[in-house]
Image (cartoon, rainbow, N blue to C red; front, side, top):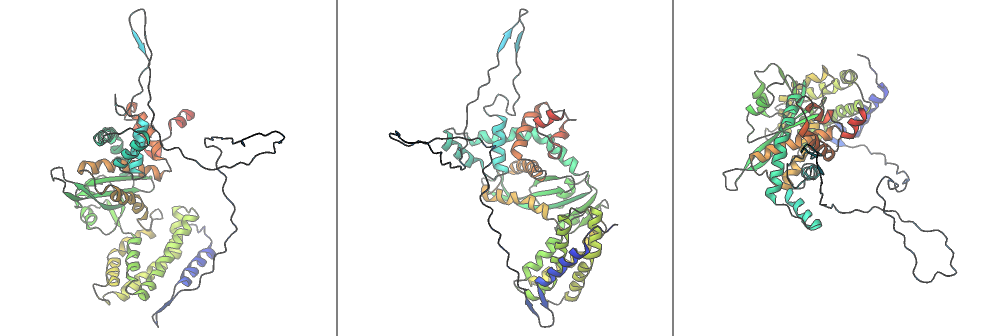
Length: 455
């Protein structure tokens, strides 16, 4: 493997990281080096307001008699303004003609997701992106519509619209699920999502949103299940073969212990997090090992900043990161069974020891990330969903949410505006054949206008 990196720069990164936290193991004292004050650059001034925005110009003239006055130019103020979202009534008039043979001719009606309904595809895309991208529950959207436009949609109506869209989008979700299992490297995580029992008279139960991320395919799959049992990941990933990076949840170990097609890998961030917590009780010893984690992460950041290929990243790890992984391993061996079992430090050491060997693949494959952080980022919207909606309406409501989160979070991974994507997909889904469906997955998607240009 060729070493296409600046050795001086990498070694400087290591030295700076070590210097940032000086630990004296003999005296047990920890001090931090003084940081150079950032040099504040002069402010470059206010950014100009983009000219592509719709512009409204208002001219104000002085009142009264202007006799004897000469124009001497004008003062111009430019600023942002907003027009609150407005709802319009849209009518489509399709003219009909009758030919001499009695046949009636008429332009075809543009298909909509809600056939013969009162809502456009664009309004549906707006409702769904507001809920699943910006975390605004439907009842708050209803309140805003009524306040701004005087129009009120019944909650049952909006729920029905979502159900219809869910049913029509299920074949796209099925394709996403099938495609993500063709990857040979996945990351997984899960988070709690409470839901109401259908028959529980308002009683809520804990459900779980499982998230699977294929970083190289830029796909994210959300799956809602009432439980956290071992059979959940086993069923979801029944056709998967490759590396699965997870936290230490026992469900994954139990699900794949007899499956030699799946290699479980641990997450360095979860291991490091234990020592960050233990700083509260034993900062000196925690800092001793954290400095090694910090060096590893700064080396990874360097590789990302330089856009390294997998082979380059692997070579970098083998030469510069491996010694610090070995230092952590030695530190763990030295401190094993030396601390009160219930202490945060003892728990961090035990967790690290149990997971450490599952990191060895990092020095065999440069495609693999050191941690699961990108999947945790994808799962954060569920946290905000919980804060705004408290719980899913029922188990089926959790399944519907999983579908929309799969699409919008995959859009984000691919730099796509979820609203524009949903609007376009809603317009095209009606006539989309099974063979064409692959082009509606976000990584393959092109807006309608872009497709016409390409053709």
